[in-house]
Image (cartoon, rainbow, N blue to C red; front, side):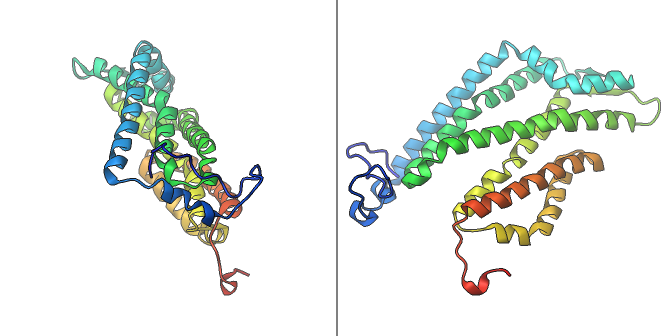
Length: 279
């Protein structure tokens, strides 16, 4: 990869707008033309990281002015569960816990606000190592990745929080009151939101594996039963230890796996010999 602009990049041989199409050999390999030393890679990586960190800090400062509203929104499912059961309250256990928790809330919200910039910087870093046709996919992938992450977090907030929190309060023995600390609730909530956001990236991961020629729809269909077991294992690891939460997470993942099968069917570059073709 290289970000040297001393010479223009080679045109795409497959570009229909080119009135004199030529073979790729005449232009040379576009990726090889952009090759650069390791130190230049590290400088470019540092530049992209600085931009991502600055965007996160700006987002964090912007969210800090509304941090109490963000916290109220984040804790609303738990407060509703406590109010419905009448068996607990939210509290702090250390003098600085309230302030530090709000600071962490601003940080998490800042990362979420800056996530499109962070994704864009990642794709811009790897873009010089891609061919012209692959570079056209950067913007759709950034939007798709961000949309899926936010969709997973929204599903967790609207569905998992709604069912899991009342359940865990009600299963306590009679006479036991829940005294929840702000810090512990934030830790559980952010872990669940992040886990669902990451798991919902499954179609994007499938797209990359398919484009790399590592899998196709035949592989995914054949491995479906093993994938379902793996999904339930992941659901058991990242959700509260109850069957309802695990089913609520494994269900969407199975649907996304089906979407991944279609994506692999449309985009896979894996080549099979005739004797390898499934019946």
